[in-house]
Image 1 (tube, rainbow, N blue to C red):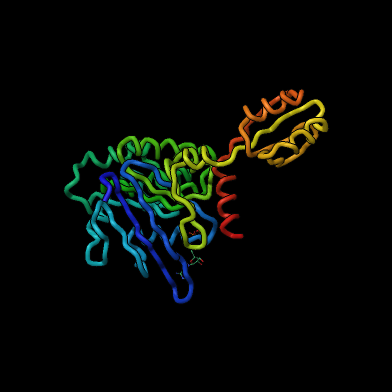
Image 2: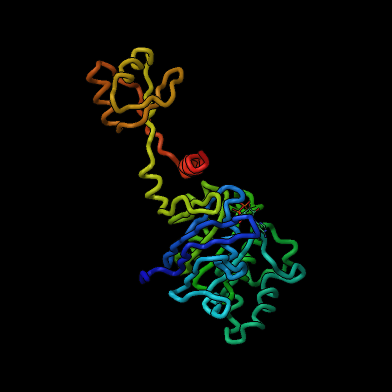
Amino acid sequence: MHQNLLLEAQHLQKYYGTVHSVEDVSLQVQQGEIFGFLGPNGAGKSTTIGMLLGLIYPTAGKIFLMGQEITPLHTRPLRQVGALVEFPAFMPDLSARANLKQLSILYPHLPTAHVDRTLEMVGLNPADKKKARHFSTGMKQRLGVAIALFNQPRLLILDEPTNGLDPAGIYELRALLHSLKEQGITIILSSHLLHEVELICDRIAVMQHGRVLTQRSIKDLTSQATETIRLTFAQPERALPVLRQHGRLRIVQVADQSIEVEGITSEEAIIYLVQHQLVPHEVHIVRPDLESIFLQLTEQARS
Ligand SMILES: Nc1ncnc2c1ncn2[C@@H]1O[C@H](COP(=O)(O)OP(=O)(O)OP(=O)(O)O)[C@@H](O)[C@H]1O
C-alpha cells in the first residue's frame, strides 16, 4: 500500500435486490488532500459514502483505512473518521458550546479546553450564547463540522455540505475546508456545485451509473481537456473558407464576428492565418471548466 494512502476502496458493489446502486467503485484518497465526489443524481455517491462510513454493508469489495481493512468485526479505524451527511444533527435549544459540552461526555479523555478549541477551529465563537436553532444555515453547518471534528478524526467526510447555503455561506465553507486541510485533515466531499468543487478540491472522482468514470487531479483534468480558440475578425466570411482548409482544425461555432475552433494551438492558428494574409482582431483561449468537462464525461458515458 502507498505510504500516503489514507483510504482505499477496491471494487465496491452494492445491490438492493435487483437495483445495482453501486456497480464497481475503486477509490484512492491520499493523506492531506481534499477529494471531491461528483456525479449526476442517482450515480451512487451517497451509497458509496455510506459504505465508506461503515453505515452500509457492501455486497462486494473492500475498504482499507490507514492500511487496515474495515469489516463488521473490525471497525476501529472508523474512529478516525468524522462525518456530516447532508444536514447537521445537534440539539437546537443549546448554544454551540453547550452542544459540544454534551458531546464531550462521550470523550472523557479529551481536555476541557477541547470544546472551545474545536469551536474556534470552525470559526464559531465559544462565548456566543445564541441557541443553535437561531443560527444561520452556514453557522449550523459549522456546528455540524465541529461535531464531526470533535473526536479529532484524520478524515472528514461531507455529503453535500453546500446544501442550502447561500453564496456567502458557500464562501465561508470553502475557507473553512481549506483551513482544515492546512491543519492536516483529509477531506472527502460530495457536491453538485461543480464550480465549488473546482475551487475546493485537489482531486475528484466522477461517478455515473454506479461506476467511476474518472479519478484525477483537477489540474490534470482541466489542463488535458481540449481548449477552444475564439478568433474575432472584421470580415469572418473571408476567414471561414481559409480555416476550413486546415487539415487538423475543427470549426466548433460561427457567430457574427467570431469563429471558434479546436484541434490546434492558438500559436498555430495565428501563424496559419497570417500566412494566408488574415489577421484576427482578437484571439481568446476558452479553457474548459470542470462543469463542461463533467458534462462531456457523463454525456459520453450515457451515449
Ligand atoms: N435503500 C435503497 N434501496 C433501493 N435502492 C436504493 C437505495 N438507496 C439507493 N438506491 C438506489 O441506488 C441508486 C444510487 O443512489 P444514491 O443515493 O447512492 O445516488 P447519489 O449519487 O447519491 O444521488 P443524489 O445525487 O441524487 O443524492 C439510485 O438509483 C437509488 O434509487
